[in-house]
Structures are given as structure tokens and as C-alpha cells.
Length: 176
Image (cartoon, rainbow, N blue to C red):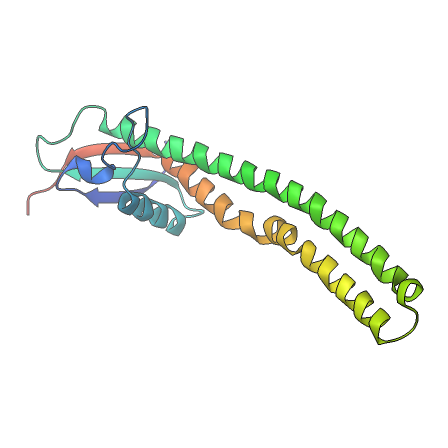
């Protein structure tokens, strides 16, 4: 068996792990924001280490049946939602890249024609430089998406997948 890197959580009540059933039409509540932040921080801190383990220490007799599977399902659902968010980001990136490249091409054509349109002088220089700057600004957002915006989402997805694959144990908290 793999060596586990345990995340030990002492809870006063199992409900601390989950949001109250909210707007979901399916009646499933995900992890509470505080619990999700905690688990993500712990999973990221153990990046590259052994397989994760989650140990939920609860007061004696307060371990509801299926708690471990419910937590695993919550992490699996959150990982699925994060994967969809990344796909949506790249879909948006492709759209804005097509728009940005079209605008850049038009701006570069306008810049190349600036002297033909306005002759030699400050007006032609202003039009040429403005068109080039505007064209490069038009591809700023797609460049940002493809170079940077996906990285934190990918990191979060990896942590959520590790949490969904974690070995989860529920046990009575030690006295004291």
C-alpha cells in the first residue's frame, strides 16, 4: 500500500464539512467554503508527496454513515466543475484570440496604409502608431488567458483530484 500523507481534521460536528443545502436543485451540498479552502491549502502544501489521506476525527457516536463517501463525492464534483471551468476558459480564449488576431491584422494593414491615406507627416505617424498599439492591445486578453489565467485553475484541479482520490477515514477523536 502507498504511504499516505494524512490531513487530520478534528471536528465538533460533521456538518462543519458541508454547506447547508442551498440553491442546488439536486439537494447535494458541496464542501463549505472554509472546509474547501482548508483541504485545498493542505493538499497544495503536500504537492509531490505521498498519496493523500484524510482523517476525520469526530466526537464518539457522531460519525454519520457514508460521510467519507459524501466528502469524496464533493471533491469529485468540485474537480469536475473545475475541469469544466478550464475548458470554458480555453473556449473563451480561442474566441478572443480569433477576434484579437483579426483586429491586429486590420490594425497592421491600416498602419501600413497610413502614409497612403494621410501622406507624410504627424497625422500619418499618429495613425500608424495608434493602429499598431491598438492591435497589440487587442491580443492582450487572449495572451493573458493562454499564458497565465489557466495556471491557478490547473493547480486547483490537481489538488481537488488528489483530494477526491484520498483515502478517507472517520474515527472517534481522542479524549482530551
